[in-house]
Length: 331
Image 1 (cartoon, rainbow, N blue to C red):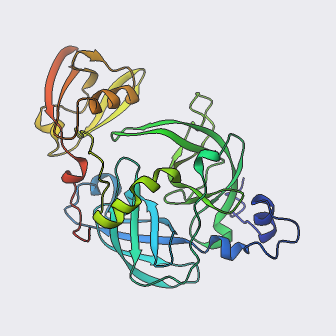
Image 2 (cartoon, helix red, strand yellow):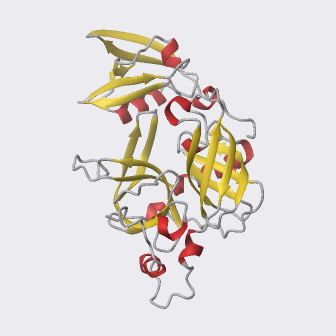
Image 3 (cartoon, rainbow, N blue to C red):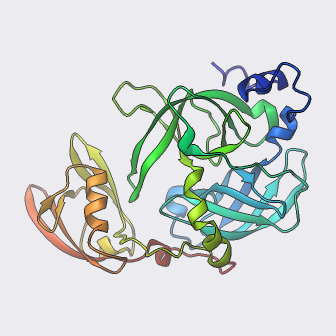
């Protein structure tokens, strides 16, 4: 319903949802609250690995998080980009540099070439969110692109692209401009970054649509590394380059990354992954954890699979996902 209403979110509504008193003169206005949520546009390297799935031109939201124009967004908007620009809600456009990307969390960082003259959004605690809490989802465009939502679930999320969060945040109703959108708590603080629209936010088959957000608490341990080196300093996980979907309880390979480890080891689209090193894999999270348990990136992954009813095996020499990408040398 809110999408059809144009996502109108008045200053009074903001005050109510972030817990202000009726006389909210000391609270930020709606324009001030949403000013740190900016528009991001990127153009991707022509030979990038991610263009097939994500395209060469990408657009979404980001959140200004310091006084020097550092912007937090969802990484798929900027990974492998060679140019980027930021547009503020008052219409100013500035070029931005690529700062860093983290595959494990999905976060990306950009830096405007000059301060944006926008008060940064403070971080809240995503760990403090509870089911049925009222929040705000805001994309670029100011108050008319913000809308109330509620927390439906905080639960594990596994993506088909070798991605796993132990606890992601799911909200409803879905916001139509979720990519890089800000999840804002009642205190007006940032608690999550928009990643996906999902058909089953509860994860119980009920079919209630919503959005998935990456908890902002995951940023603090890696923020310094991303700024200094463009990537987290933790040991990288093994990556094999398959897109896998759970279909009626089976792990079906829907895509094999060209020139990736799995393709080189002989895997094909339509193969059914059954386990790792003889141990059955019963779900995507189970598969990923078994792969990652083999060691750091570079470890050989003994993958068991079926093809046309025949049981097969391949020793897949894994790699660091970031080393496969065509990353621009601004980081």
